[in-house]
Each structure stands twice: as structure tokens, then as C-alpha cells.
Length: 420
Image 1 (cartoon, rainbow, N blue to C red):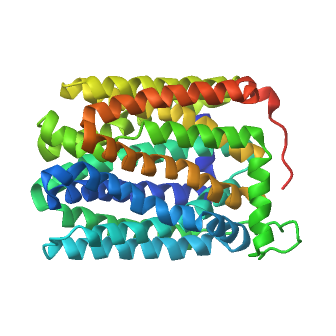
Image 2: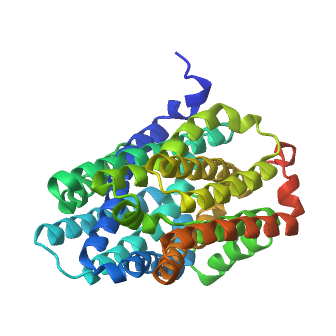
């Protein structure tokens, strides 16, 4: 029986195994992300809450910047499935350590920062290997569908994880959320073990399949920065999320502005993912029909900025929820189309390095943005921080779109086969 067109990538066994494992694992990770911010907010005095929450972003982004080039080279030079087995095991150990510390009544915030940094370092190696592995699990014509399905996977987990985190925190405390995440990594490990006949890596420019040299790293840097299309999508990703990232401030909105407690916080944290999920489902049949992909990305980021501004002004729970859902919806349109463009425009032998460099942009933007949001909120209040960030997002988007006409004009007619 043939698979529906909207699920065609799932007919490939290895991709299907990874997809199911990641759905369960990401749900646990999203639960932990929400629990960690809530945990930090409980361990610091009210006057230090905003900056303490923003500092979570700083400790997460530093390892990404340090390891981004190395991790991309590793993903292109080593068995990607083996790299993922190591990173998933290490991430599970970090989550278990957080669970034990929380259960024993942790009173200081620095161990949370330290373990967050370790977890980010693990993610710096996990993400390039995972994103570079996916295009080898499906044929090229099914890659846009696989990227869409991965987006739906992530957004589904982003709804389930924080919503469950709010309930678990209210009933059992943050330690239970950390523990559930530690267990969830086992599903990805099982999926990786069950895979069969995963294609081998193509050689680098030097002709070697295990090239871990500095020259291999610089080959990836040259490719990214000599490609205006890929470079501009990365810059747009970084600056838009830097200015319009306010996730770290949600505990303040839930506790001090909207007064909705842990359960309401869980739903606010999940709201962007609700919008993302609905949009992601719609994008499955629509992605291949969107001809002017570059213009669609620009307008999606504009919508992201507008929704952020309205969120900053809102004093009602459901309006805030709707704004956050719109933030997630517009981000999904932009993310799916950016990923399709990058994967189609990048040779397989460079995908790990491209993703490693991209990590600095798409992870560095929101994490540094959380620090910026926390610093501004500490001086001028959380609403001002969110409003000014949304305006900054709109200004930067207009500037990048004006400076990169090729991005504005990019369409499906520009897609060409890329050599491996």
C-alpha cells in the first residue's frame, strides 16, 4: 500500500525509526527546557530573576560557538550514526544529573548553569550529525517532505513537552521533568541501533572520508560565506531570533504579569509550538507549491516581529497565548523553507560543516537574545524588552532583504542538482 504524499518520507525504514525516536526524545527535552527556566526562577531573588534567566542563554551559546566548526567536521568525517549514539548517551547523563541534584534539594543556581553548558556542548556535536544524516536516509525528491515531517516532529514535542512540564512541576517538582527527559534519550539510541544499510560518507576534497583537518573545517567556512543565499538565510536567522527571543522571560510574565502559575506557564511555553504544529501540518503539502521561497521567508520573519511586539503589549492570557502561537507559526514557515534551501544547495560531503556553522547563527541568535532580553528587562522591565526586541527584528529583516536581492528573488526555478 503506497504512503500518502504528505508522509512519503516515512516509507523509508531508517528515517521512520529516527523520526519516532526523536519525537519521544524531543518531548523530553522540551519538558526539561521549560523546567530548567522555572527552576532557575525559583532559586534567585526577585530582583535578579530577569538577568539570571537571561544568563541561561549565555551558558548555552558559549559551547556552541567553541565547538561549531569542530562538530561539523566530525559529522562529515565520522560515522554519523555512531556520533549520535555517543551524544544521545551523554545528553541522557546530563539530564539524569539534573534530576538527582533537583531531587536532593539544590539551593544554588551555578550547577544548573554548568550542566546546561555541558548539555549545549553535547548538542553542538549532536545537531550537525543528525541533520547531515537525514538526507542520506531518504532520496533527494523526498527530502523536502522529510524536513517538513521533522519540523512537525519538533513542534509536536514542543507542545507536549512544556505542557507536560507545567503539570509535572505542579504535581511532582522539577526533578521529575529532568528524569523523564533522561529516559527519553533511550528511544533515539534504540532507533539508531535498529537502522540497517545506512549509506557511507562521501570523501572530502582531499579524497579522505575521515578528514578531521583544519583544511576540512575551512572548506566548510568558504562554502558558506561564498554562497550569498546560504549566508543571508543564516544572518536573517541570527538577527531575527536575537532581537525577538523572549522565551527566557516567560516565567516573569506567568508569575508577575499574567499571574497564571506553573500550569499557565507550561501552556505559554508551549504556545509557540501550538502555532508551529498547525502551520507545520499545513506546510507538508504546501512546501513544494511555494514557488517564491525567498520572499516567503522574508514575510514570515516580518510576521514574527509583529507578533512579538503585540505579545509585549498584551496583559491578557489568551491574547498572549495567541501572539506566542503566531510567533511559532511564522517561525515554522521561515525555518522549513530555510532548511529546504540549505539542504538542496549544499553537497552531502559538506552538510555537517554547513550545519555546524549554521549552529552559531540559529542557536546563537536565540540564546544570546535571551541574555539581551534579560538584561533589558532587568533595567526597563520585561514588556519593554519584548516590544523593543520585536521592533529590532523588523528593522534587521528589512535591512537583510534590501541588501540581498537574490534572497528576495529566490524561487523553485533556481533549484539545481548539487554534486555530492
